[in-house]
Length: 336
Image (cartoon, rainbow, N blue to C red; front, side, top):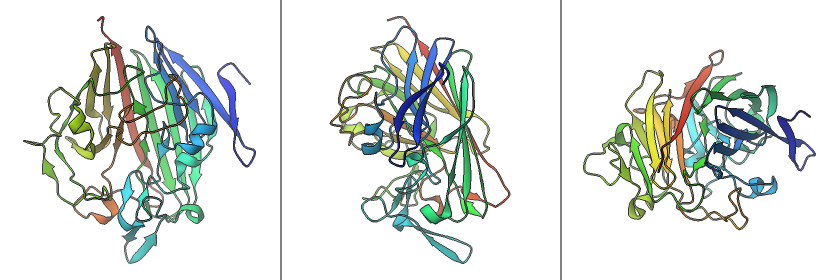
């Protein structure tokens, strides 16, 4: 293997999990083939990783959603069922035995992806989400590229095609902590959104598109993520653009480290989860066990439960069409 690619672990079926190291302009990323997951992300001058991950492979099997791509439909599908035309589809009830979360137990985050291409600044991986495994119509081939650009930018680009008309909503699911240790409760955040989606007790959108005016979730201007807000924060924010062109999604800053991250995306929504339920019994790459608010998930994506919500933007992907998503994560560090 080259210096860029290293052995990281083994799947139960004997498959080899590899780790790819990328570097450019002081930004360094480590990606593992399991889930096409971002294992680590470092900025020159700041030793700790800016994303939560594990130094060894085994914990990734026990603690899902630390850095992978999730789908074929990210987020939740109510009652694990939806309809396309006259046909009803049943998918995996992998959350509370009621609904589908992140494509089900056999979604793309649990697959060992194949490396298609790599060099010092980028890697492209692919996998196939099989109808026979997940219940979604058609076999869906998904490709994801991590690319480091100038000025300390991490770009993620995703495409997908399906053999049958289906639904598709891919998301990247890293937990960010711009300090590298501790919690994100000292971070300041601004979200470029005027509305959000209220949810029921199962985190399923009620169908209402609610103004942020006067709500605790009003992050239209930069403000601290306070504990009482973080405890409730697991919602989709409706971004202020619907044309699939790149637009700002969120700006988050740590006064402690001086690091700022700005996310722009082609997507219509941003799921924000402040990590209330994080709880691991093994240390991560920063040496600590992860607990509540150790990281915040900021996931550009389409709106949750869209197949069952006719007033939400559609996530229908027709056979022969290509799904496309791009997001950019720009990092900078100010002197403290």
